[in-house]
Length: 65
Image (cartoon, rainbow, N blue to C red; front, side, top):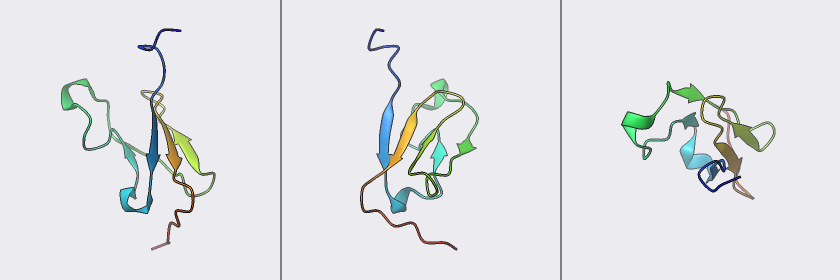
């Protein structure tokens, strides 16, 4: 597998909630429809469109609304 084919992994914190992909800093011309991801239950979530893996930073606490 080349590095081009490797999936991206992003560590996120409570400040990034509600979490969605693509993130605001991603290039808009190369993006897909916005999808919201839940990392609170398992500590990670993968985008169904681009395969980016989002992982909750160690020690982060997500508070409910």
